[in-house]
Amino acid sequence: MTMKGVARKVPRAFERYREIIPDFEEFMEALGSPFPAYIRVNTLKIRIDPFRLLMGEQGYDLKPVEGMEEAFLLDGVGAPGSTLEYFLGYYHVQGLTSMLPSKILDPRPGEVVLDLCAAPGGKATHLAQLMKNRGLVVANDVTIDRISVLRSHIDRLGTTSLLVCRYQGHNFPTRTKFDRVLVDPPCSAEGTYRLGPQRPLTEDAGMIRTLSGLQRKLLQRALEVLKPGGTLVYSTCTYAPEENEAVVNEVIADGRAEILPVRVSFRHLPGLTCWGGENFHPELTRAVRIYPHQMNSWGFFIAYLRKSR
Image 1: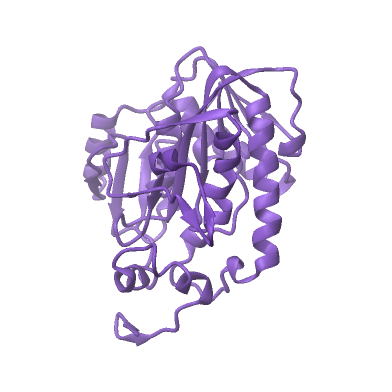
Image 2 (image 1 turned 45 degrees about the vertical axis):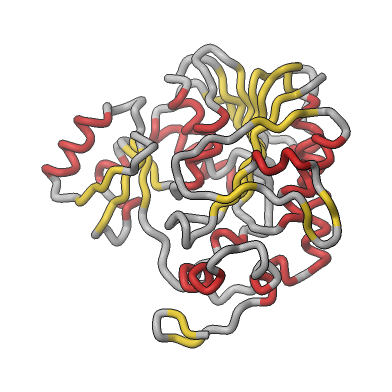
């Protein structure tokens, strides 16, 4: 197969998705293209219209994203994280699909929200922005280096409603109950595989089992600290059903949570109801799968849940 005029072998990890990804050759071609530079306007520091005016005066080419008013495509800037406006905290560099989990969770001012695996902080700071810095976002992570990056983004963006803590996510204390929880767990990150020579982690069956086991524990603890009737978003940047539908299926099938419809204005596909001989709950079609040839960003899986009890 030839992509952009360069022959490229399909990694085994992606070949196994040929039957579930429509226009598979277009999907593989998208993996050979660079990531576009999307940015999120930080409305805690500047309103959207003044930001557009300011960036235009500085000569930056901004393209709005239909369906997400705070998102823009920033063209012609080799290092979007090195501008004065970035260091002033006027915007955050973030994959477009990475902005969706926070938007779907839809936190409200005054609520208490948990981001269980928060670093490096794009989603946590977005949650605080959506809440207008009113309420509390608990941003948890376990890795010191990643927490350092998280704290630098918090300071730069002026997110004063964030509390940082360091727990193993699956052992997060249960004494506090949250209105909403975001779970974006460690995953095989296939959705970020573009132009890279690295070997996809899902070519290793043992790695898939390790990751899916951790993800199940994280989702279980997230439900334990969520108030009854509270909502939760589970998201990953991977295509592996073992890390997506199979993980969510457990809590749907045993009645711990119900899956809610996800409404996004971008092109996407529904979640799977079977994989590898295993059948999943039929309502998993309410989850969404996003592929880079349909939406020019990272590949993503998102499920929106409500705790039943």
